[in-house]
Amino acid sequence: MTSALILENLCKSFGSGADAVQVLDHVALDLPQGQSLALTGDSGSGKSTLLHICAGLEPFDRGKVVLAGHDITQNDDAAGAALRRDTIGLVFQQFNLIPSLTVAANLAFQARLAGRHDPDFTTELARRLGIAQLMSRYPEQLSGGQQQRVAIGRCLAARPRLVLADEPTGNLDEATGDAVLDLMMELAAQAGTALLLVTHSTRLAQRCDSRVHLRAGKLQVPA
Image (tube, rainbow, N blue to C red; front, side, top):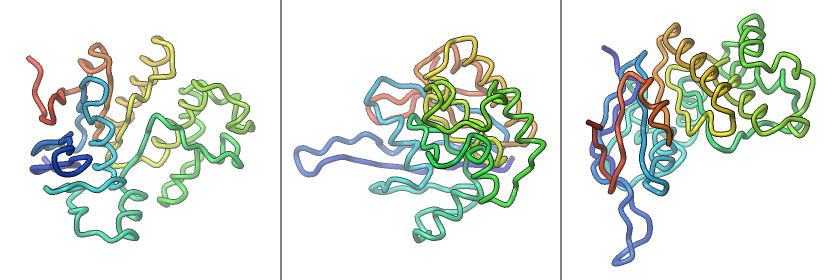
């Protein structure tokens, strides 16, 4: 089975010398295309750092990150940006919506950049995310939960090969969060997209195909 994401002996430290703190210690994983993987761990364990490294947004000390067959350590900034645009969908805790664009334009933004904009698909996403009535509004006119659903819709509208999601339902109530995760997993399965989900929720993690737990810089498979 083709791998969407491979990590080999990934190491990352903050600080230097005696004050250095190693947050990732020879981390390795292989996430096949079309599979979902939940990443859990205590606050401050390095989960978000790992996700940022996978997206090519943060440097690491040594090891290898391979996205859809491309070793990102071989990329310059332009190649890295192109790979993110064409391959990865990001849902981080900061919504990063574009303030000057409406909800409709924000939803279409990433898909247009990737050359995969499908108005009918985007409309259906908005309906299923419960934001169809908000399409003409701007981000400042939305609640935190509404902005989160727009951010998720923007990611999915581009039909990426790999979705990196950092607590994607953290600003949603449980029922809405469950519905949004259902949609993410359904669309990922339909499109053969891989999903790496960072979550504090054991209940949500158990819904993924597999789980790993980050502790003391190492990935462990929960019993």
